[in-house]
Amino acid sequence: MMQSDNDNRKAPLPYPWYTTPVFVLLLLGLANTAYLAWSHYRNYADLTFNSFCALTRAINCDTVSQSPWSIFLGLPLAYWGLFAYALFLVIFLATLRKTKGSEQLWFLLFLLGIVYALASVFFGWISATKIKAHCILCLVSHATSLALLFFSWIILRRFCTTAFWTGVKDGWRYLIRSLPLKISILALVVLAVCTRIYMPPYWQFDLPPVTSAIPSGLTEEGHPWIGSEHPEITIYEYADYQCFQCGKMHQFLRRLIAEHPETIRLVHVHYPMDHEFNSLIVPEPFHIGSGRMAMIAIYAAAHEKFWEMNDALYILGRARENFNTRTLGEMTGFTPGELAGASRHPQIRENLLHQIRQGMQLGITGTPTYVIDGQVYQGSIPAEVLRRITK
Image 1 (cartoon, rainbow, N blue to C red):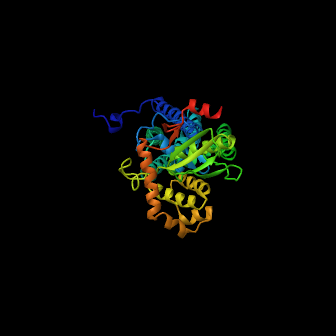
Image 2 (tube, rainbow, N blue to C red):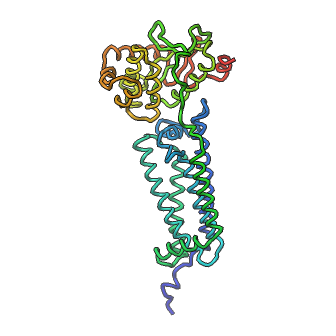
Image 3 (cartoon, rainbow, N blue to C red):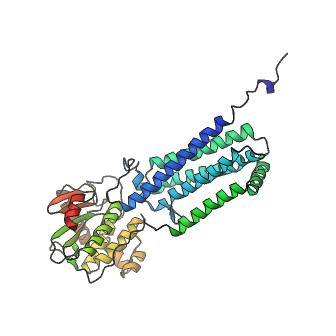
């Protein structure tokens, strides 16, 4: 007797063969986004932090963390990832109860998987086109989301025979009727809202205000300084307005000067990592526009408004956007025409190139770089030097 097609069709593997990988993926997603959240905080709070996956310009978790795209709706993106995986986990655990109708929850999980997959594609596109760097751990998160979508689809095909939209309705009815599931989801929503409201915005740098209480001026070479008029220690910073670490260290040093105004002086030297101005160090396009930002700062220094302009440029530099002369003028009191002219002025350009050549003579290949008592420190100031400065 010939067997029918139904008899030849293999039975699906037992249910746990499909749910166990989903559970493992969710644990991986939660652990991965928890690390990303921690790494994001360390990038902003720790002066010397470098994540293990900051490998190159193109593969660099720190570059992604430092991007304004790492913040979404007022929270670091990693926190939204944590809440997303937690929501999937809560609903997934309810499917393991095997009560009547619980399998219909997979229709809801499949829809969540679609949303997560679309979000992964979108943020992958942002990394490729806006940030122009990829985070290895973000890629792991994207792969996890796509895998959850795949397993949700497989489970629907193997164990759920209801028509799709009927299954979605049945799954929603089950969720509404399940008190433990409703309480768990509500608790998660409340936690997300409270986090959004009460988490301090540690990713926002606040520079101390420029006041007459802290002296400032120009060195004999024409470099702007702030701090002590008769310093015991002078710190020369070679910086780029689009360099995240420069902004973070500058904030720290300004606060340090506010605490020790009688002993420390900070001298600013422009060293933009812009291929248009610094092509020997940066032969390919990088930090486009930072050279013209430096030219505007040089112009402001000639009008005794360097530090106000400096702070405004760091704010715009953190946003990773080409400076807008109108916005910059509103922040500092200059007209857009003045600033546009300064960014093209040949004498100011030559001044900037002279500063870059000074840095090259010291062997500086990146920013930030600091010169203290003739010693050159690239990237950050060593802890033992900071202890000596602040003792």
